[in-house]
Length: 189
Image 1 (tube, helix red, strand yellow):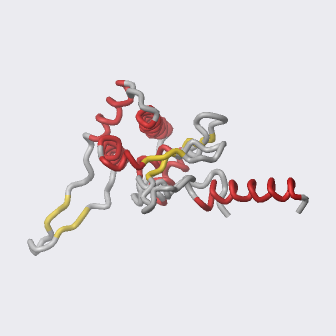
Image 2 (cartoon, rainbow, N blue to C red):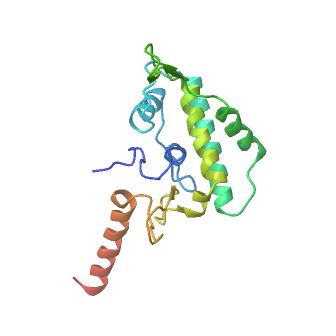
Image 3 (cartoon, rainbow, N blue to C red):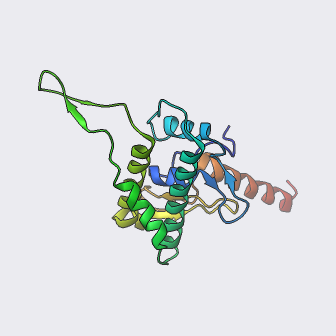
């Protein structure tokens, strides 16, 4: 069973997965990155890039700031508004930080990728994903979850484009259960 503290992994994009670590942004915000260990867990389990060292509190603060910038820009663009320059600058700053470069193997015929990712390099990858989403054609497929207590944005990659919830196992099931219970109360069933 999914708990409220579980990370979102089905928004369709890593940048939206990071933005979803702050739940119910328009109501009673739920912080899914309450401490540095939670960010380490997000890097390993969602981003697929274990950091290999403890995250510091200032690094957590920076990751949250990037997350908040991504969320605010996505929300504003979704609502047809201009983003704040400070949020745009933060994403651009992180996007300029690149991952470890590929290396040619000693035999000269293969490529190896370093597993030595820095925190900034991981956030840089997320920032570049945000730039790609926000400025590209996939943004036309972005939707906001229809659940009353959810503010998660997701990319609707479904063929008919009629997805309503950030996750069927999270918000979709709760909504269907509420509808079912309401119907049974009114019909006496």
